[in-house]
Amino acid sequence: MPDDMDISIVIPAYNEERRIVPTLEKVIDFVEGRRHKSFEILVVDDGSSDGTAAVVERFAGRAPGLKLLRNPVNQGKGDTVRKGMLAARGRTVYFTDADLSTPIEELDRFLAEIQRHDIVIGSRAIDRANIMIHEPFYREVLGRIFCAFVRFACVPGFVDTQCGAKMFTREAAQRIFPLLKISRFAFDVEILFLAHRFGYRVKELPVKWYYSAATTVRPFRDGPKMLRDILSIRWSHRNTR
Image (cartoon, rainbow, N blue to C red):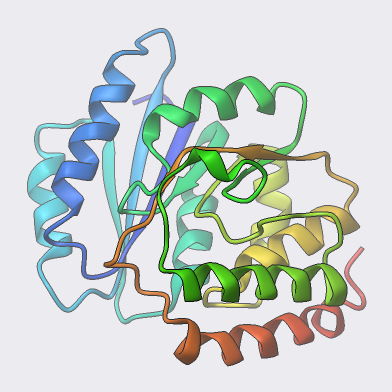
């Protein structure tokens, strides 16, 4: 494969043995329909305790553009995404959740916007009519409270920082991701904090989105940790320029 690719797709995965094959089939079908561009697909297994890694390795035997990276033990989504983003060879780098809550077909819209921006982030909140399957009401309310806190405490101007679909130019990815200190779910906020500090052009793009009940984010368990991490971001990067 060439050393340089048009697009890298990074998929963090933790205990995704049951869902990862349908996801990879959809992504590869999408990629094969766009043969005018070169793609690589990086699945980063975050120390899964199930057969995720073995399933991906078997699938890679019939998908030359697919590569498996592994964390020996569970490190958290932030560390897992960072590993994939820094290994990516694409001039444009996109990460998306293993459940494809944001359908892979939305990638075309990201690609159109990245021509005029350094970073494009998916948003479930700008146009809620794009939400095909809604979260339970309590999760939506907690999510809105969380994003309001983020705007107040850390990163102003964004309606939804936590959608699991984001695209970067390689230059932006290679500058931001080595600096990430948050290993778990609040890493998205740290990304946007650094993007703002570096003056990158960021587009918040409304996307189609489907809630999955198999999500590993648990608001009452993870929420306090995320709030603590957000409060640490400014201090952690007080000397970052």
